[in-house]
Image 1 (tube, rainbow, N blue to C red):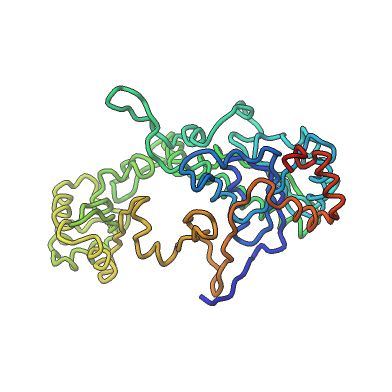
Image 2 (image 1 turned 60 degrees about the vertical axis):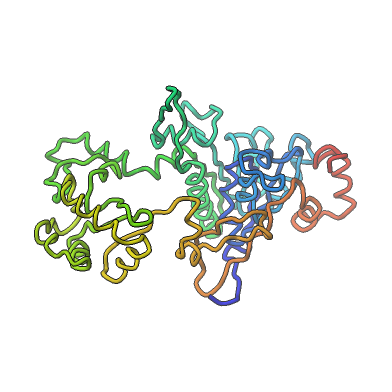
Length: 416
């Protein structure tokens, strides 16, 4: 990579009204160079104090989701505050409503109101359950979208209490990614046609969309077996949907190594043959050649025992090197705590430094070949950029800004 930096979304301006996790809808856009102006209520986004850990007084959630943004406080209940918001939107590309749908419309700042100010505006709402459906007005938090989507299975402790098991939160991460994709599509459309659009994304929908394979498989299995079967390598017997169908796999499963675990993925005959020859056990291939593709040797416990013993003879690092040398897919099995020690992570995902963004953070995984993205700035304090934004974006002079502050447009005068 060169020393040059490039911001692909330089020139794109987003006006964002967000609280808590949905603010992540613009994190990637800010990382890519968009000017994201976070409009906060006078009391600020209480996400700064929500969840754990708290890093020097500010939550990691807030530091991560709001890095690279500018903050302005507006009291949208005041005519002056609403007027400032319209001036912010006048030359912007996007407005993000990251809250229950309709919050801005109730202030006279919904899509229909704002397109009169800027016909090219793209208006994106991100919410828990979306703008329609029987759950649209229900209050919710992030794990709700995963339980709704069927991703989280309740577990029971030794005292008989049900609890939330450890899992990756899908909805609160996928919703922002799909939302950012929609925003970029809207901006392209608006710049090509001069017409904006209103869009919305639900974090619950997004969780279901990410988990499409399982739900679509169950749906497909509702059809007769004459129409929908399993793999030819499984004699067309239907396996359980998704990774549940891999539990009893042999040539595609996790094995214990001498110092940890590795994932073995020789489901193609070519890879399986390479492995057997590489470990000096060609007779395993001769006895169990399997099908050409997608053969996991499901239920072959004798072969599974052979592989268990073989994998215990090398360390995980040695098995990874073996896989590269013998063209056999073998992957590490990391944890969220150990992944940072993995050399692939260290090469591809260098931490954004705590000195810049308040805590060590994973970078945007999108890379620009031949250049580097700028390091994001620290997530803002509430109203940190009031004067800067009002002057640079709205063109207000110091006297106008002082008058707006005195009128309470930025919050109570003593808080401004």
